[in-house]
Image (cartoon, rainbow, N blue to C red; front, side, top):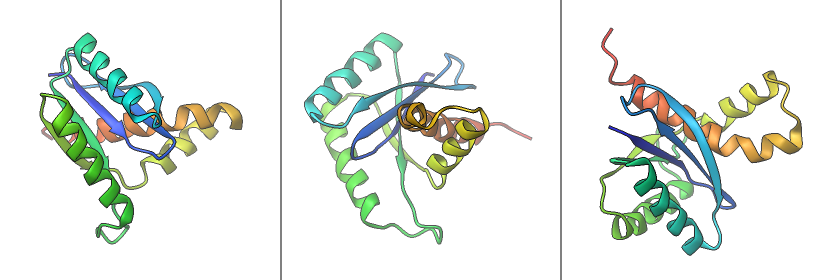
Length: 138
């Protein structure tokens, strides 16, 4: 089953996709959050092209596990998605994914101006890999 992960942001929305077996996540792209209709159009294209069967949306949580104002925005975002796409949508804890993505890109010597464009899709990939790894039996 192919899963598409979404790292929701106010300026950019990062996307990552799993392989066909649902084992490995890879960064896909970022889409500008505005105009929102443009994002929805691109999302539908990707779902069709990649034969996506599940949308995984990063849910921001505070370090203590509680939900803050950002989580409310993501819940509203998910409600719009549910009215727009015909596949299941699930949320997943995204705590520290952007921080991890930034650390990874810094360690890889990615220049600051290029990190800005890569951090969102990398955060989506970290989120997705966390989800995929949750199914691996030890």
